[in-house]
Length: 286
Image 1: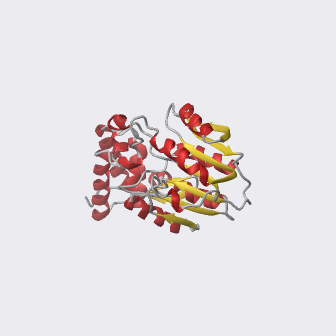
Image 2: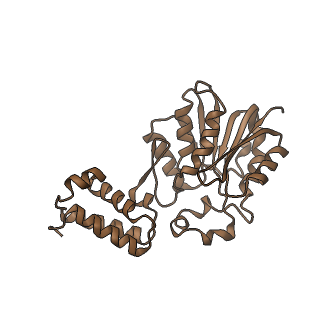
Image 3: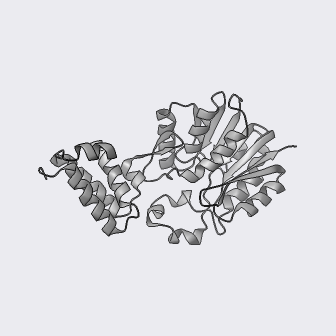
């Protein structure tokens, strides 16, 4: 391969990815080029005739083949950006998505940036929500709870790499609620598993490579919302808020669960596709 240029590798990879049925072959090929050779689009145009050394070319081709097998691009790259922060990701942890920005923004809008808050992130995964909130509310205490051992490794790594103070706890939210005092949090937020069990097999191939325990929300997709609203609302201070990311067509059901537990002033945000993607409610009286 010692006569192959970076541009030739890019073009070959783009064609290979397209033939494999990858939705965004040009973008994915460029991302892998940047990971291996450090060339962004501008560098590829200006210096694409640079000869690729054999070792780098072989690595590049191996990563392209992983993508052709529908391994998520984010896992191959090893990190992904979310709301201005970089998060290490890989097999065993849910990939941060733009949709999650909506629930984070609801939380940020619920209080001023100088507020000193107690914040709890349930089903924290990579720590995307916890880390961004820790940066947004610098005077606050943030606790992140995650059960999966693999995801917990990424959670701890991302807390450290982003330079924030977040208390990470490896616990099961279905059994650990008694470890936390009532009336102790100003924000409880969660992006829980919310895919209906029977629908997991219909998801994109890439998504099905993400951990099922981060996707499976039970028979109706609502198991985690049902439990968190019923058992964790009591952990909120008076005036505190509870916020969730939502799946499609879940707003009405989750809204009713929140209202039943005394959460009021229900607000929501829609994503770019028009789905009611995030919900927040306030506990106005105990």
